[in-house]
Image (cartoon, rainbow over all chains, first blue to last red; front, side, top):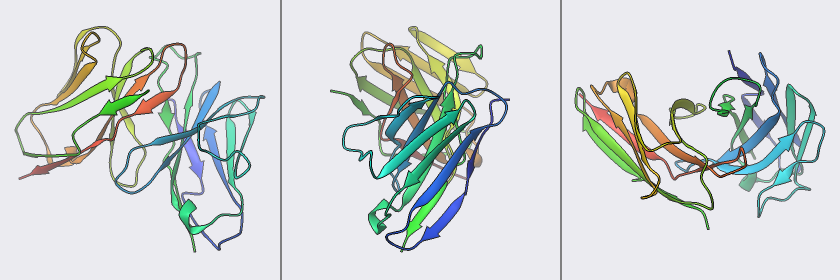
Length: 118
Length: 110
């Protein structure tokens, strides 16, 4: 149980285009979803927190107009990187948590999306 | 401010024991997580501590001292497949957000 999927797993795009990444909780309802970015040999940096049906909360230094987050349902959140540039190339990972499971309220991570902007 | 420190890299031999330390200074505390991450993959949950003491789970154990802002992950009977990054993450009080440490890259040699 508690599986999170991401799509696509890899994407290569040209500079200036927009890319949408989907994050789905497959077997549970995620009250909260998180988006992280990870550069090579570095740790996970939280970009934003999203709750279903409300606006995402962005971390300091993350441009909300560039990284659009939509959390339209309890099982789906999307991250759109608008007008992508080479410096946006990174590993994007989502996670989901729920207060409905009897666990540590831990975050369950998706497999990540490798974005390369040419 | 929020600060979580771990050693950057560690090496160990197959069959040995290794301890990965994590010190933290955060505004509030509501649990500490350890995750394992293989290169290019998502982190996988290893352990959770919210009270002081040792939590044992098979070959892996995790310890927490809240007064010292300190935790460690202990890996016993190391196997080659344990070569990975180990991430310490703290959850601040009254939030689900996790603040991740820098991560420790562990290499296990035969």
